[in-house]
Image (cartoon, rainbow, N blue to C red):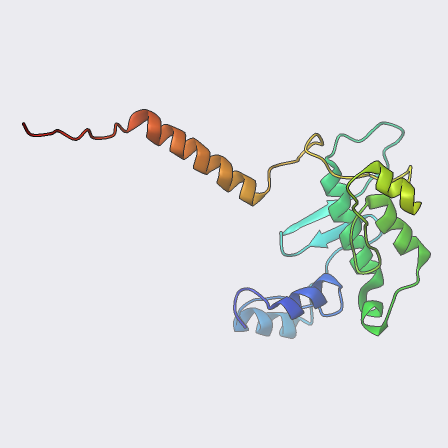
Length: 178
């Protein structure tokens, strides 16, 4: 096993089906002798995202609107869905309405939910698709924490580089001999 787990192991770990910790043989020996094993401190209000090395905690808003970006709530919801559905995902569709409602409210694609994206509002009306009033809705560039996609960054850097090149590098002129 290398530093990065394969896609299969990573998905099993994300679903909390297969829990493991990477380390040295001496660390394993120490843990076995002490009879201790690591466990993520997850519950209904806290999820751990091991690949990012962080934990997200959801706290009641107490009536005040949250100042946190939408994508943190989406990350929390997706990881909470994976935690709660866990090994049941391997046995077939999960029919837990509270898990499905959480995915619907957070507006995330997960193993228990999907999203439909159409071009215009008329398309939604034509097919009778209505949005939930209590969801985070679509992520947009206007929301906090939104950044351009990697390909957009590449295009921005390319254009700025070309402009700087054209501005500061003079093109050599050809001299003709008479």
